[in-house]
Amino acid sequence: MISPKSSVHKKAKIGKNVTIGDFCVVGENVELGDGCNLINSVNIQGHTKIGKKNIFFPFCSIGTLPQDLKFKGEKSYLEIGDNNSFREYSNISLGTEHGGLITKIKNNNLFMVGSHIGHDCNLGNNLVIANNAAIAGHCVFGDDVIIGGNSAVLQFTKIGKGAMIGGMTGVDRDVLPFTVVKGNRSYFENINLIGLKRKGFKNNQIEEYKKIIHDLFEASNMKEFILKLDSNVDLNRDLVEFINNKNLNRDICRPFK
Image (tube, rainbow, N blue to C red):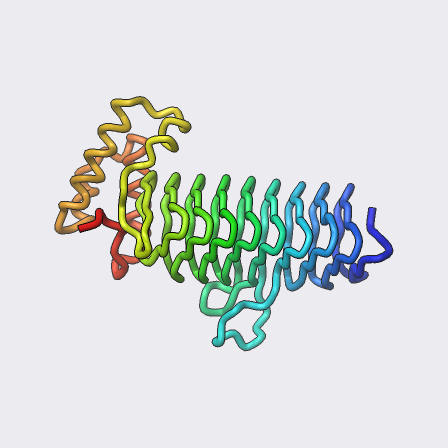
């Protein structure tokens, strides 16, 4: 059902069983997958491809131009997976030529009120981005990441799988998988005990991972340290992959000293 009070471009591709409420605007190059719901007053623009069963609450703005002074109007994209929820006033930017021309969001994520996802971000599955959190451009998040309310993440930051960021935290360094960081300038507080238990890890596995993280902080060379780890162990594999793919010019969040 499409409300006659909405403006949907005739070239937009609308899937089956899509609901578009009053006062929505859907641009020419938008693709909406089956079962999406635009409640009302939703703005979706740009070369934006959206999967199935996403829900958009009033006043969210999706696929708008990047907030980047280097952007010169080049053709760029936004790709969103399935079963995501975009709450009121959340906004997601298109990509730029300096980041592969595309912003990517996977599946089953919750973007709370006023959250911002910048250009060229690449976000995983099952994320919770809390109220008014601001994620700057080019950030990469693994699955199951939680960002607390009113937090800010610096551009080009990488946050590992299962990490949790406390509320009102300024994240300016990379965050290891299954760790908790907080603070005006983020520092490591602990491993994410709750997150690990929710994922079914046993106490002995958690204690072993805690020791590995402690030893990693003491290591003089992260790349050499991870060569000693058994990558057949799930948690080790996540850590090895994270470090092998991170920008070594940026440090990780470490314990407060």
